[in-house]
Length: 377
Image 1 (cartoon, rainbow, N blue to C red):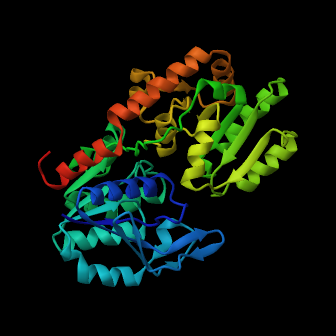
Image 2 (image 1 turned 45 degrees about the horizontal axis):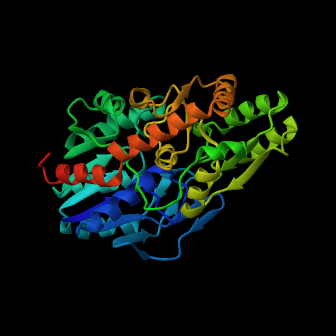
């Protein structure tokens, strides 16, 4: 098949987080299977400061990526506009058998989806949980634009039942399939060992955006340090609004000797962080299907998440992660419990890794995805 992926921002940019990683993993696996995959995206590299990708095209393990000149109207994803991409779509979209749009209330995915529908090309939308909030101006956008796009798409690819419910609340006529996120299980001798508990290192790895709640991580660190626990706390990820606030807070609390900010990391170094860390914390509340958590679990790193995660039932059923209330006290208590109980940490490590291997590899996810494309599922 000739498959067109569309997404607002794509590597080497790191500002779109999990959806871009998901799209890249899917595209590479599809290309590996002999499909011709092209990704169209903006040329935005960073928003703060505003930088653009110099290359017009790239090849990523058989995936052709086309970066289109993009006008940043406002420092928000929804305001990234590319008229050259729009022109290219009108001329070229008919050449593809399937269009897969990594969807949000953004200009680029909206215009790609609309053009595919207009030219009667099979189009699948994957919102990555980004249509969950319907407050404020979102409900008017949904009523005027999003519902119609969902209705006329060939199908909507949802992460879990929570997202199915969100989508059908916007558009009851939407055709939905569940397609979870998946990670590439790399053939490597690097994996977490229970010996890493001796490092006394607690890791936050994700975008420093208010949604990810790095401040909750810092509050938990403060409680532990003030109680006399000898631990190190590492914060890795690109700034998306919370970095200065987090750094100021750490300094004011007087815990800067114990908390280190290490910025965004290339994927090779992410693996190193995971296998060296003792515990990984994901403090955000409404995560749909977090990629960083899957990658950590795939390497065997014990994970603590909050009870607002949308795959809580799966994690509880498989006993694959520790689930706590979204408070500094609960997170701190969970950290103490895992450090004090290596057997429990090992249990979460083994169960998490087994869950990923059994159900959440990119190979299994793309097998399902391809069958949906072809109408054989």
